[in-house]
Image 1 (cartoon, rainbow, N blue to C red):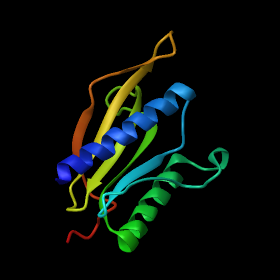
Image 2: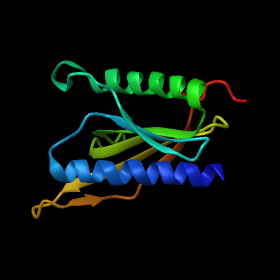
Image 3: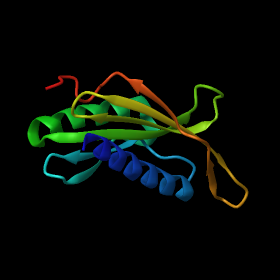
Length: 138
């Protein structure tokens, strides 16, 4: 069941980030999660984008997820930002997604903007990473 929640969170983040890319040049990092009640949540950090760095948003999102976990209980949570692929420095959607059992993955999806204003995505690069949201495995 956790795998399905991770997949649902990834798909929501990917679809929302894809729409944001189609609407403009970039976007502030944002997150999504699934509470133990089954409710899907969308979250962002209210920081002025012109005076803050993506890392400020990411830190705020992680802190917000930790608080939401304490107050409401989360099954899965993740965030996405418009970044760069490590392999070739190409533009990429960068995801960090975690399950409540402490497993976490990083998904990097390189992309290119095409002349017709569409976005062409390369194959996702997936790797296991350390958990940052669910730091205390139950």
